Length: 360
Image 1 (tube, rainbow, N blue to C red):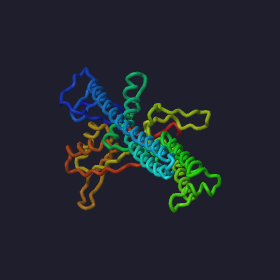
Image 2 (tube, rainbow, N blue to C red):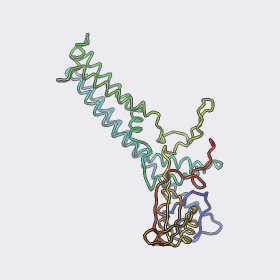
Image 3 (spheres, one colour):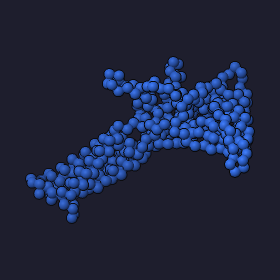
Image 4 (cartoon, helix red, strand yellow):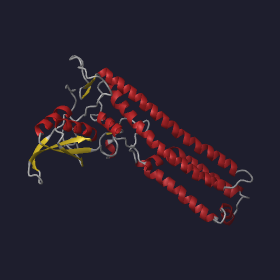
């Protein structure tokens, strides 16, 4: 089996399909996995089709976002029109406020799905297509790993709170402001006659057995909570956004220096794992892991306390996307092996995060 020359730690991505045919020696192989070889032209074609599929998904969810916004705008206009009729009541504006909040929740949930597809699209735009258009430009060393992990283990790149706050700030904040002004205008100026004192305004603002001051207090608390969520979530930037550059560079004269940060890197560190393999064929298993996965393996001596037999224990650091490959390699070499895969707090060294950083 032949393997592609790739940087240490960058996993191999399997081809979608293809015969186990040998590639000509003069033709570079981009990806290879278990006998499958993907040439540059085949790899580019597969990525283009995948990019078009993700664009289509993102457009569908973008349309759904516009739909909920349209619902909120239409119902707001209808509620204000009804309330400002001669026989209209300001209570319809309060009911519409609750309905708009429901639309905001639905749109925030849809926005999380949109960001999932947008994350993949921007990742391919910045590290695949841009690197082809500008030859000196180099993709991030783990961009393929990040994309593969997102495909195998989909995870929303944005929290519900951040999605709620972002949609509120961009669209719904103005709708709530209009509703609040309309409610005050109806209660103070038009219902049933203009109020000249606080007592008259309180009487106009009352709903059934609820006094006007209670209605006003609930409205202030409700709207203040919404604006507080929008304000507190403004500093969260887990999601990609729609038109953000690949890197943010800090200005040195501000005194803040954290270095360039790639926009498509999520706030959480991607999961890294530690595999412990107990086998009587440690030499064969270790060689297969080295040859097929290009991962380092450390061998240690151990003894089974129940049987009293000596066993070799292999230790290998890997990422979440490599677990199926590891299990296949161990199973093919020693079906009687015992494998433990556990999360690692941090893996430093060649093929993972650098042991020495610029700050140190």
